[in-house]
Amino acid sequence: MAVMLHILLALVLSPLLLGIIARVKALMAGRNGPPLIQPYLDLVKLLGKSSVYSNTTTWVFKAGPLGVLAGLVVALFLLPAGRVPALVSFPGDLFLFAYLLGLSRFCMVMAALDTGSAFEGMGASREAALAALAEPALMVGLLVFVQRSGSLSLTSMFGVAASAPAGQSTPMIVLVAAALFILLLVENARIPVDDPNTHLELTMIHEVMILDHSGPDLGFLLYAQALKLWVTAGLFANVLCLGDLAGTHGSAAGSDLAGLTGLGLHVAGILIVALAVGLVESCMARLRLNRLPQILASAGALSTLALLLLWR
Image (cartoon, rainbow, N blue to C red; front, side, top):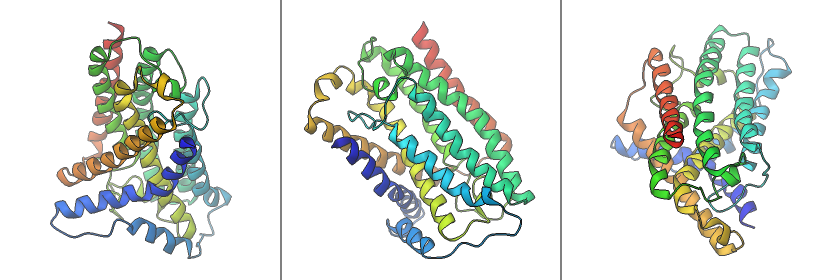
């Protein structure tokens, strides 16, 4: 029951994360800001309209939003939630999880290139360049937990007790968590990497790729953006909760109450991540494009340092 509840909460509450971020930014700026349910209202409005397609686009452009959304939904099925195992779990599913995020990005890039617009092609090239730097940092960070748990499954990695004592594991967890938070900002095109509220500027990355989308297609992309934020924040929350779950997952796995409690803590952690993202965006400006490789290199360095601490 807790497994299906996790999926249901993610599908229903993910747009709320965008509302929390927008509300926090407004409050930090001294404004009331939009209501928390504004993303839901935007989705309803977009789904009620019709899509407009350019004569230069093909089926690739039309299939892009559905491919982006499908990849993230399947990735959600592979993500555990605290003490609640993933809906789909098998040895090596962490590689499928990473490639599903890459598939979602690939569909976005191909849809942008299919428009034939040099402006959208510019954003697509930037997205691909950032992905080439972000994916190694993600895989090295996950490798730390593979080494600790001896498993290639996300559910086992974040649920099975690690061989090292929790006190010795804390520095590694903090380093990987810091790297994943940087990657969260990059993957979701948030400040200081990109500004999702900016349009028609030469420094855009994500927003420039969806300029030609409209109606339900744009709604699918907006919902996929919220779902991707939930998935990456959920991965970050799992990393922070690993020390507490180690040694207790085996005895609590069969308890519905323990599972629901763990799920509640997991969801609360995701909401706190959205709050943290809003605070970061309120306190920082967008970085110059030539600084983005440096911030991704720092995420890779943090993950590598955590792995070296594990091997020492």
